[in-house]
Length: 64
Ligand SMILES: [Zn+2]
Image (tube, rainbow, N blue to C red; front, side):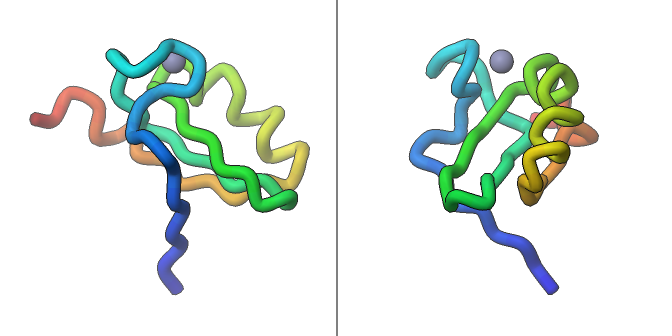
């Protein structure tokens, strides 16, 4: 099964539009969030606690 999370922007919700997102979360409410590597690492546990579905692309950090 493939998980798809649609987000408005492929950039970090916390850092702003200049920072690419690598970790995506869909909350049980249906809200989607996107985070860069550092923010994703910071918020991952909390997101999971809230029952979020996660797509973790942090292994792609540094790829072109
Ligand atoms: Zn960030």
